Image 1: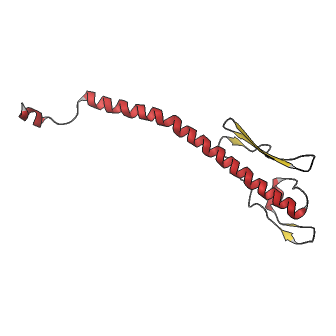
Image 2 (image 1 turned 60 degrees about the horizontal axis):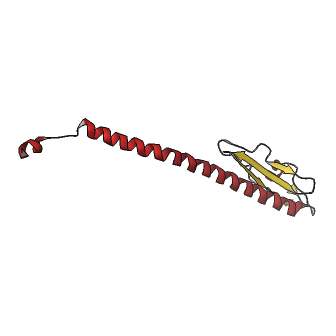
Image 3 (image 1 turned 60 degrees about the vertical axis):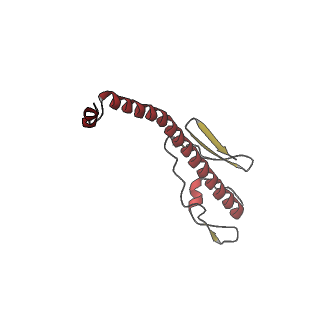
Length: 128
């Protein structure tokens, strides 16, 4: 009997099926968690982009005394009230993460403030 067990090599079909089933179960658990992490990363990137743009708009307003008409005004050099060249305040307007929209990203409000809005992944981020 001991010689017979020593000559046995490899795995049975049942053992292989059990291993495949365990791997499939682990994959089924991991995939939704991975998708959730991807969504959180996109939300974090959008928030960071809005904060960067808000900082540039605030700096522009502090140096020039008015809000920029468009975000493209942040990417060029302009003259301040004393005639000194200032800017650019932003290297370029950041691209939205996948599945996100920066459609109405920048809005100048009637009271002299601005609003930044981004949407995606079922989330709306607004910065005053």
